[in-house]
Image (cartoon, rainbow, N blue to C red; front, side, top):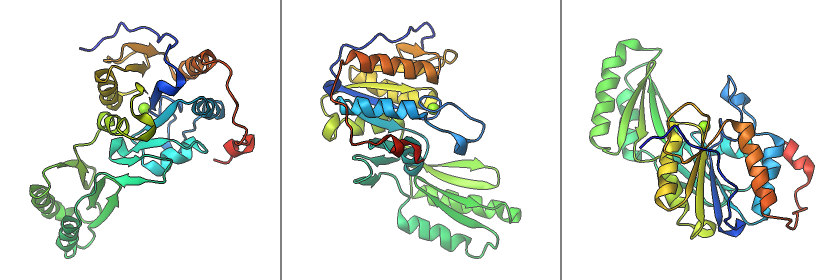
Length: 266
Ligand SMILES: [Mg+2]
């Protein structure tokens, strides 16, 4: 199933109004950096994507990052976003935001009640996860473990991820492939040809979804195996390919509503 001998993508013949691009962010649009908060999507890439939108291409970002971070990295682009590996979905520029996966409130209340007597244990709510931290109270590790497993008995779609002094419950039914399929059922995306682009294992789910719908997939990086039929070496090679693809669409009406300065405000 996996294939290492993939080639560079050709320039697509699909019309921009028929194309839907599903883009990973880190390692795909933004070069990988040592600290995730230092990541940046180059100005030229954001401009390029905006020009693609102006030509009619439907754009979505699929990232492991929370929605808010994806929006910040791609500012001022307005695009659909699947955040937290698809557990968060924003269909239209943040205006209709859906949390597809949140631990039911009664279970969160149960966890809170359970940790109340465990001094030093605290609970953190994340967009698609709940973390019980016990770093300050290692003596309660077993109690936390029992409490979390009791919660999981009532939440079959959730799984336990044990970190360093933390028990995290995460929804297991969401991935980038499901996010892609869901977005393809909405508004601008319906009936288009999906092309998924990404650089790591979590992107393979999006590739599988796009390919199963007759679309395409590009894996960034030339080391890891992938089901993607096409490959590009790195972030820069993708930017070049996207620019060539945009050029292939031919001259369009440039959207002057974006002032250049807007791209600098990130
Ligand atoms: Mg990535």
